[in-house]
Length: 357
Ligand code: PHE
Image 1: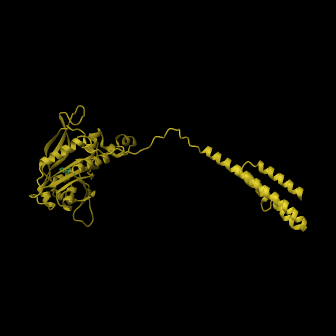
Image 2: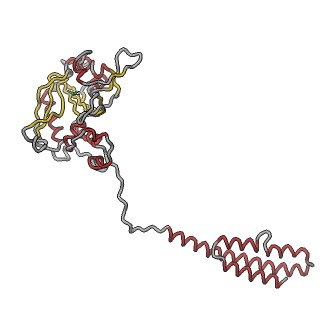
Image 3: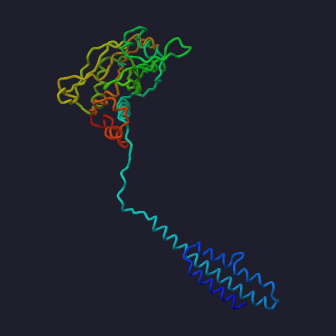
């Protein structure tokens, strides 16, 4: 019995020291201490012994069992430590590697221009208004002094939608001017608002897209004159193009909803393409004093209140500011174009005071 125990012990210790991974070690544990292991077999054999013999043999077997168990635990600690070191070595992070270039998005130039419009006019006390893209014919035309069959409707290449159960058609708004009407109907003067947003006309070439963006502006108060219109728009143009001495011309024109109406051109040089000076003119926006009929349609007495309105194409002013030749680039989602013309999300929009204009 004694010899047998000692043999088992020395064989077990040998097997434990030879085990070089946790699985082999566990197999060794099962072979000696498991349910049908060798040491367990010795313990089972005790039952057949005489009481004296059994006491002595039992003590010996327990010592063997404990020594094997201790040896296994000691070896397990060593093997686990080694496994951890191997993993740590494999997962080491080399902090000296150069950083991978960041794939960072940019603000779309149209969004950027609308942010700039909001900041520049915001500094002059204008608030931003929003309205539906699918517009009631009356807001887009009727209330703006453009009656049924007026040629201006044809000029605008309108998308008409026939809405069931309505006696007037719906349109995809051809201009942001319906926001003049919506604002005047919603709140009493004084009003100073701009409304950048999407507009639609059935037109498609290098300078026209069926969906494009405009920005409307409206000021209504007592005693508003053409001088206010001119001062406000000159300040805006000089700040937007970042040219304190930019020249502009106010040229007489026609819109049904303003009287008098004008188009505003900025100076440029046809030969160099440079904006702000030179002997040629580029049309940049439409404007005028709000027509008395429009004020009356919106419940405002034209003898009490006057105002001016203006509207500009967001794509157009963006193309001129950044030298973009083809309007279709705006909608093609070409990553290289967007990362060139897009603005950094971290660059704040500067107000004209901050630019020193
Ligand atoms: N709505 C006009 C257009 O689309 C622009 C405009 C707005 C003109 C406001 C005068 C006043 O061409």
